[in-house]
Length: 503
Image (cartoon, rainbow, N blue to C red; front, side):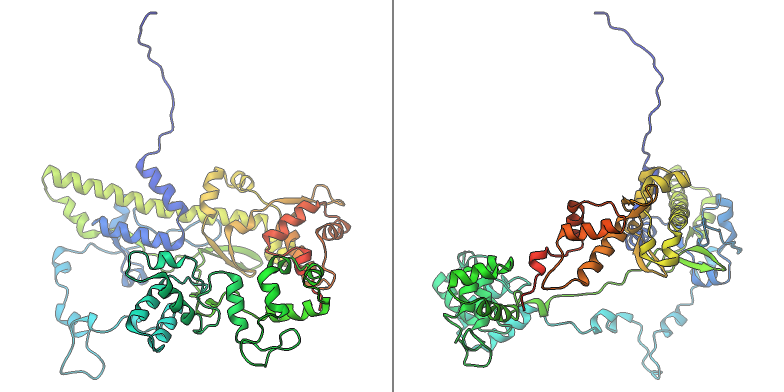
């Protein structure tokens, strides 16, 4: 076998660091973009944020025009982004150093405080420090533990147990693990746990669902099958306790006849006991759950202007970047080769960031404008007119790759007359119509129809999946029972047996 050298030409697609950065910026959410821009401003001295005063006066600096348009312009409008003009002169180093420090410190003076101005802004608490914090389940239990009258040793055990209770109010690890590595015994931990299980909320500290419900039964009363109003702890041995101990699975599937047969009681007694169990709380820690509501800021607005739908980019809160005039002037002077190479590298990086942000905004507006064109009936009339749409259709419409469309629509939101919607909402599969084979119906619309049918059904005779499919077929929608079951599960709708009501 002879060895030889061959010269061949080939083409390869290489992801440069700049291209990787542009792709990364394209798929970032709004919050992640703000954090990324703040990081670039911190790391690159040639990047700076346009002052609000210069932005309002339209004088963002004409020096950026000399750098091949390397200023990030705000973008708005339909189908594209328009650059805002900016005029203004360079700032000299003398102007930068003459900052008026006396005026700066005097601005920290409180109203009415003329003799003792403060120059340290950190003396005042931040907004986060002034907001009231909700009491957590752990704090609530520790407060009760401090008032329980237990010895210091038992309180130390109690703090270990409370620290291992999860947000639902359950102790899901064995007591042997709780006291492992300490001088406390399992018997001591067991006695302290019984005290904690008497704390508010009732049922806290249970190790499983049955124990949680039984703890709550201790605060109910007793009647023929266990009614509310009698002495505490009287439900022991009742039908309610028997169901909790041995028939929770049957209760979950609403197999009341099987429970009645196993306990040798009437179906009416089982139904009455079920009412009591339904009034118990399976997650005692739910009232103390941390339920913060985070506001979603839309990336684009879709509004109707003079009979046409217009896409407006939301750039509120995002910094407007430009090349620093001071460093631009500094680059004109003579410097060592190392300094010049450093400044050139940072200048290219700053220009690329600004252009990447501008290209990102243009791409988002272009993609959303295409979505609006395909889903115009949805914006006019609502979710019933949502059409099936895939990434390929939008990609072919605007001349981009499907992967680009996927990155643009990831973690981005639109505000329109129909509400706040994620861009991924508009991409869904279609179902064929029997009367119009060429006209597909969106799967989102079918899910809404299923949800409406379930909401209007008779609770004593809930619709089965086959019955829902039959009703949809009467409306000329070609759908199988398995598809109905899939959509029902995606909408978190229980099965017909679980939705059935006997009383």
